[in-house]
Image 1 (tube, rainbow, N blue to C red):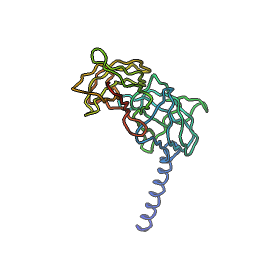
Image 2 (cartoon, rainbow, N blue to C red; image 1 turned 90 degrees about the vertical axis):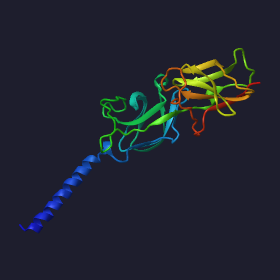
Image 3 (cartoon, one colour; image 1 turned 180 degrees about the vertical axis):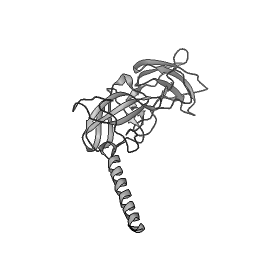
Image 4 (cartoon, rainbow, N blue to C red; image 1 turned 45 degrees about the vertical axis):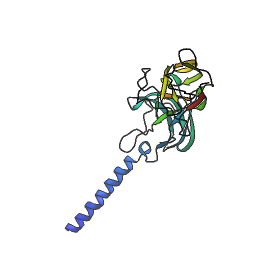
Length: 247
């Protein structure tokens, strides 16, 4: 056998092995087509626990599950919906409200066990990329304008104002800002769920009149406002702000 012939055989064999390995890596569970798309602003979850994932593409039928955050990684499964193979638009998922976190992780899982039965994480294991990583996305919890209800009012005893209703799906703070310069005038820790007649004591500077109430996620869940507690956004990307006047 000539050196040239041996070299050509070696190249052909190497190409065949590489192609075989590529086919193995590109199986249904690791297809590059597996991915999840969410809104660039984050994920909105209604007061009833309903959310919608805009686009899910999966190489084979399985589950789209939304998981709570655990130290920056997907944690407890809050809810799952079946997704057929192919492109799925506006996939609804019903979530358990008590387990919500301010960051959420949608993820794809295979339906390996009893067909049609959610058995996550085993035997319904995560769909993985060719590099062995779970197919997931990450979104910050979004708010709704209806979550804060407040009216114009006189300053009450002890420089307090009353916010009629605030809904908080996760640990949060109700913060009152001076509209003139967005200075924090006061804040109140909220209970998870519906909060009624919430009193907030203000530190009034001069002739403050126009103010606004805003919700901040309480990242440390300690009831204290810090620079790391971000203000909640709406699906439009704007801040959740309810303006009112101190009469």
